[in-house]
Amino acid sequence: AGEGSACALLDDSTVKCWGYGNNGRLGNGSTNTQSAPVSVSGISTTTQISSGYNHSCARLSDGTSKCWGYGGHGRLGNVSSSSSNIPVSVTDISSVAEISAGVDHTCARKSDNTIWCWGYGSYYRLGNGDSYDRNIPVQVGQ
Image (cartoon, rainbow, N blue to C red; front, side, top):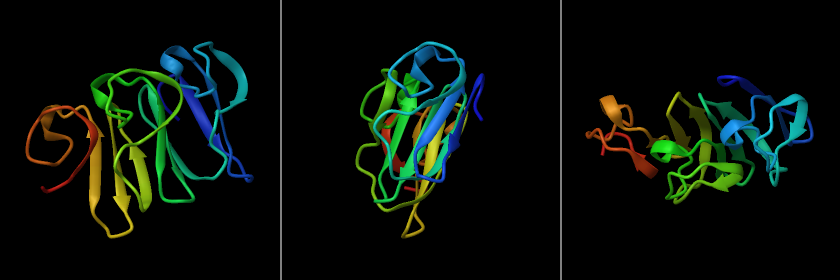
């Protein structure tokens, strides 16, 4: 669950979200608020989801990731700071084993156990040694 919305991973590997729809945080191609679950567009092989404050991200069965919702500070990881009401691919990351969305950023553990983060870099929250926002994943500790 995020701030004002929630998502669920279903047995058929699809995702449904409901609640406040601003900035596209429900991922269904709209910004409308929904009182009942709506299908997230374009993802059907989801193995994990995680919701942050205004965005959500999914790990797909092929090891890639997609995010949707508010894109400020680069939190969708797609070389942009624009919001998206449908899932967009996270740039330059594969072999994702786990994903976790925070308030303004997201981190992923790859199958080689390296950690990669993107989004709001203030307070050194991305773990890469600086406090800059990153709109693509950067390796923690590098």
